[in-house]
Image (cartoon, rainbow, N blue to C red; front, side):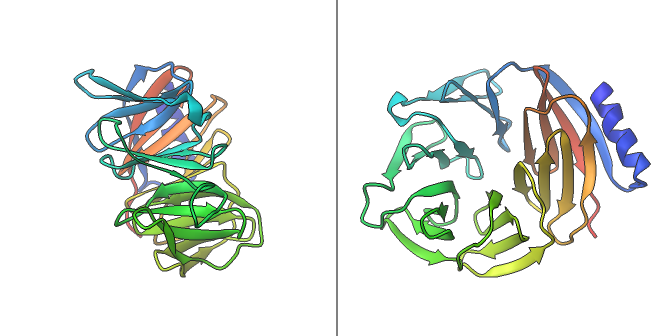
Length: 260
């Protein structure tokens, strides 16, 4: 209840009467890292570089390969093809909905060699990759193991990237930019330094420290929905549901952000 009051009071103080944030529930949660919750209410979390999937029925699945080392990121945009990225091993592993391995790509061992620092799911069996060597964002065909589109090089520090099947948002030192599957920039906003950037449907979520802001993807109008001394370990946005992992609790909030 305390977190809910913090959220609502902060919104009220900013005069954002149309924006509502309502706490739905809170459960005990003491895991290493919250990965996310999919549209079927399956809960994903990391523990010692293993990925776990917990269904509402309490049935659990696990994927773990100690040879891959640290699990850098997990992309849940398609629960039937989950993308795991291991940066130290320069490798992506794609899993099915029971966390069985479908495909593994070591980018140090393929003909189209590249060192990557970001990997996410794109459409038609492809991946979004950030190529550190060329400082470019690429669309990569996982069947033919070839890059099929790329952006112009970036000449400033990349803070974070978030993607869906068709688009990628990139927060860097000079701007917050949107790119399509052809490598073309669609939109550019004012620069925004963030620790975590996330997209779901028509919402963008940005976390910096313990402050969380949300915006419609159509307008550059950020609205603060959380600001507290309580440490926010992890966040996840799924449609209009905001999940916060704080103090060994996982809390779910319903966000109503009017279209502008």
